[in-house]
Length: 124
Image 1 (cartoon, one colour):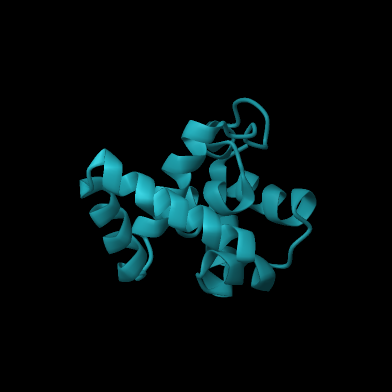
Image 2: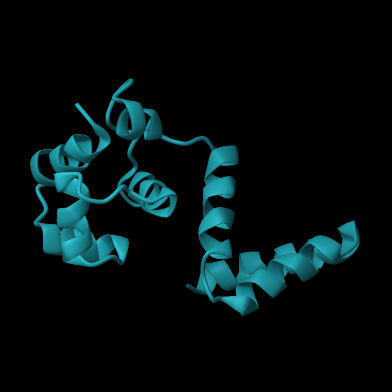
């Protein structure tokens, strides 16, 4: 089974999505999905990464057919890496700058921010 066969299997038989639904979640055209699934075009690195991230798919399975189709649940450390990777790909400059500035703070200053965030969280 080639990667384009696994993409089609994943979309149709595992996720039960139409090409249109799948393409919208990946922010690519339906025609691009059809071309990938037929092998007419190669799947891009970005699309592989997006499929794995958005649908929690094991990258080794998608690329090579090795292992389980689903990615195992992430631990706390991996969750942070995934969230930061998602943030980097967005246009959310405020959140990016907030994290940068937070990391520059002293330990005492970070404690103040932590207390503020705990109080805010209680009200949400």
